[in-house]
Length: 444
Image (cartoon, rainbow, N blue to C red):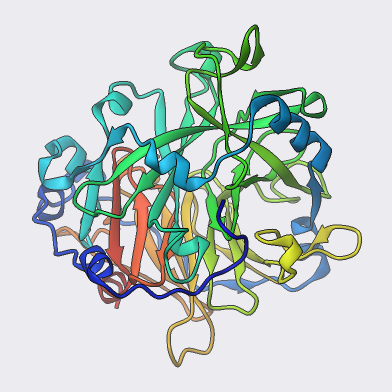
């Protein structure tokens, strides 16, 4: 297992140079103007409004609930010794295809401006049905500031199963693609199903949730969830991945062993964060839509954005929590003595339909810029990506009518890989990256 906590090895050899050597892709999607049906000019969300009053910040308070060690140990004792990321990546059985070999339908979902410099479509076995769809992304660049986890560069993408289509038993489940990105020309991946221990570790159930946000920080994976009695976050330990022993559609303990809906690996939750004020409402706690990591704060912080319907007039909230610096609490949020977590910064934005958020402080700037990715007002087609701060908002323009709908189609969350300078995201059919510098030039 990998040593917990941050390591700062710097590998600057051929592997790093190859990983950074992305050249602009000659993509059909980037060369084609958005169709007239998609060319609606998005409403400028304007400047961010700081939220400082107690009435505004109190609904953001979380309560940490960690799964008892005895529960996790009981599960491991029955299922077998847990494995880590390296084991999962070594067993990769799916292949990502570089964009030039993807279909025009796949390519058309990529951003129009700025153009992706790295893009991949998924194994056909995973796109044959629309029941499963990618919604979030995080990388080993989030996990560790040198971009490497153990010996690998890796990308994790969260997929959610539709609640209305496909196999009834799978509806609403969440799985993670563990992508081995060591060779950027031939990335491969393996699935891991997200589960939650029950009955004191004697069994587990599938996580039924829309994992629209996901951050891998140190040895933990935090995901958004709409499960339980209050919308918040679930926490997973990357060193506590379990192998299943029986291949059946069931999830949990079955005659003869353990099953995970046909997946070889499952990852049991090790904790959660719930809103003290209850479930999300328009005036209470926000429904979490997306997450990302900000390494520009001290300590590092978790950035979150609120879900409001595309085209809604309700102003969404953006906020952040800081991570703990206690070595015994690697990857967990900073809490008070009672296990409570307070937001350290919060804003309102007029952006709606938020599916991605980043916070990044430019050199010489007074404060961070917030990058907000939106779905289109109709909920389909290309969306917009705005850069906001206290002074205003800007977005890329594309098309003859100066449309702002230049971002990916049905885009998911955003993840900034500090070492490479790339912002990673997903469309409903592609995994892609754009340089942050190119993104900034597109909105200048």
